[in-house]
Amino acid sequence: MEEPEAIVAVLEEYFSTEQDYQGKHVLLTAGPTYEPIDPVRFIGNHSTGKMGIALANEFARRGAEVTLILGPSSLRPREEVRVLPVMTAEEMLRVAEDNIGEADIAIFAAAVADYRPLHSSDEKLKREEKGARTRSQSRYSCYARLLEATQPILCRLCPREQCGL
Image (cartoon, rainbow, N blue to C red; front, side, top):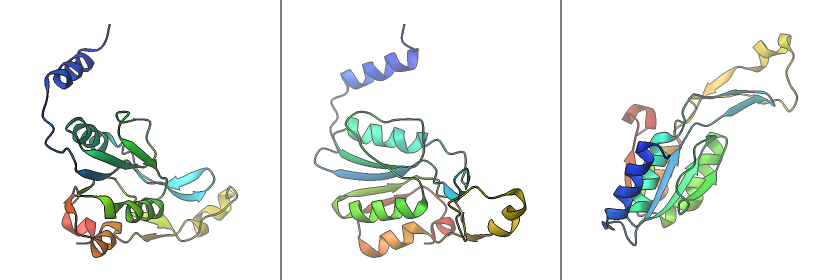
């Protein structure tokens, strides 16, 4: 038997006819970003992407064309949501820049890593090398850069000072 939440979701969708985002294109970011230190270590966080995926699902249910830029996550949205997987904050920014021109609405819900290593190694660092090689720098706001390029309706799901705005 299905879980009660799954049954309720199917019933809500079946009886809902609201298509108030029909013809709109929504761009969302969700999940964490991982900044590689070496092939086995990274700087990141415990974000699952659950909030951004829930928003993507709801916009799709209500008729929007949805593009979701998703960091590493085991969760997946509805079939009709276009997912663009990324790993790092730089990748997320690049993919967002490539897609924001189509967006009527942009929602930045990703938990972008606050720091990135100054240098990333292609080989696993030895224990004695880790300290010297894992210095990090604060990450600039990728959201501020996106705002310079376009003016979609923008929703930022982070404090103003953390978004660099």
